[in-house]
Length: 339
Image: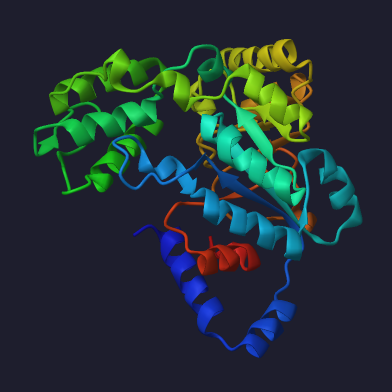
């Protein structure tokens, strides 16, 4: 179990089992001030999907409970409100965000947010909207889960053989995803080709999934924008920016900005880094965003960004995952340094 998941379980247990009066006292003592990003990807039940299960954040019912509780206990804001919150130097502000551009964001998340009068922020990888296709994380999961072998060896890409953990092979999927994210962008296609050979499956065929049902359309995104949601950028192809040259980073960011402007008529003022870990973006990423007029950028490695330690280009977000219980979710938001 990952460290963040262990901490989440502990915090959730404390939140559930500590008497109410003690919880209130603890909350008063450690009450945080700042801006906390919550990051979702997909809304639905992904426990049996053959693709990447880690991209499913909550069922529609769970997301509805999250939004209702957040509205009752926190100031839920949009990226455009960040400067006001920073100047005030007080308050507990939450930004609800989604990455990539999945169709279930429009089908499930959008109506739930609207029903509670809460704004959400949706970061779009524009290439997936323009040319719907299976993303690399789903390709890897599909190859591992459909393989008839007991493991894979990929010399030059993996330090050792990865055995398939049955029945779901989730640890094997995570191992290959981790290896992919560390690669220079120039050899990621070679990695996927090698994985297809090592698993014996080949790369997924075009008809393995109805790609048109995975991603939103521009009409859906326009509807959400008109309905009060914030739309931001997430590059065009979803590469790990720090694995690109400065010129390539600038191109990815500029292409994303251009498509948002063409389709929605809006500037790209907010952005989230693909993968979002500390080593997934760098000073050149920040510089490229500044050059395009981006005002806020969101990372994805947990924790909260304090108002006393503010950074417009590294607004931290907590990952919301499908195995997070409601008590654990509340603990994560109440005690964000445990994530």
